[in-house]
Length: 210
Image 1 (cartoon, rainbow, N blue to C red):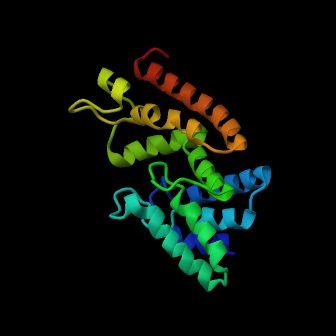
Image 2 (image 1 turned 45 degrees about the horizontal axis):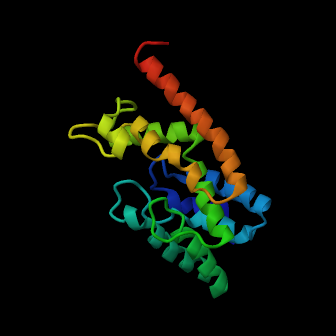
């Protein structure tokens, strides 16, 4: 089983949004979900530690394919530790299926748990910090009033910035409905309420109403 200290070395060049702190949060949440849902905890732990190990940083040439690169890296790591082929394949499926916009859907309980744990990290107080941090890294505003076109289609008009608030409307508010486990959905409901309230407050302060 890969250790936390071993895994830390895989993320030394990660950006602040996809760094090892993110991995540790996903790891802890995945453990919690695995215990609540009756999953194989070792497969979930290994998948959580390895899920962003290759190419997850925004702007990286393999960002769009990082789930496949990380799955291949996982096979190397787990083979060197003597894992059997079936369990390695199970970990790889978890990693390949964890991406929100990926094409491989989670089939196993363990894959569903990794998906849910990873998505919970974009909600709640951590979600606030991450979406603001991502906008700052990308050079986009925290808030810009969305156009009618964006509200209706999810596509910006020419010149419209994809602000942190846009990302909240476009993705974060829809994350809960994509989750698989009862435990994660309950956590997501509370975290989404917090996120909604944050943006309501942000917009009021932005416009001088509070």
